Length: 227
Image (cartoon, rainbow, N blue to C red):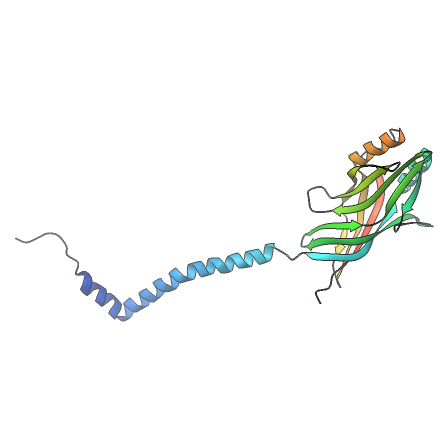
């Protein structure tokens, strides 16, 4: 009886497939494809990680200078509040206005895009009558959605809290990171809601408001050398 089924001679077919030039070519392509796919995926992953994860730089020193807004200086004068620097910070007055200079002690920064946390020493005191409020140990925090400068608040020698003191706007800021120095210029500084509430409470007034202009800041941070 003749069968209508198709029979494939597996052994002879395999020998014929691997023994001729066409078979060798197809096997090589199959092998290269199977091995090449995971290698390509690995290379792509390494390239992606390199592009996304820029190395963080350590800040060793520097200073942040704030040119106080005339409106802020006038408001303090109208309220009878006297500002002063807490060492080693400095408060300087000249024909261009009043500048507060705060030394940078340490910090970490990613340059692309700029994300940073920058610590300072010293601070600023505000005194009216028997009330003295100290704002110190400033930290510029550019790591989140809200660029802010935080600081310790001490009122008549009692620690109040670490609060967001000043909101920072980098919309018009100029950033440069050449020669192991990070500079961020023309940073707009305004009073935060938390600081306004604390100052109003301590001085018994309602004059301090969120968004009140404090001044313009320039940051100059020295990056640690890789040598």
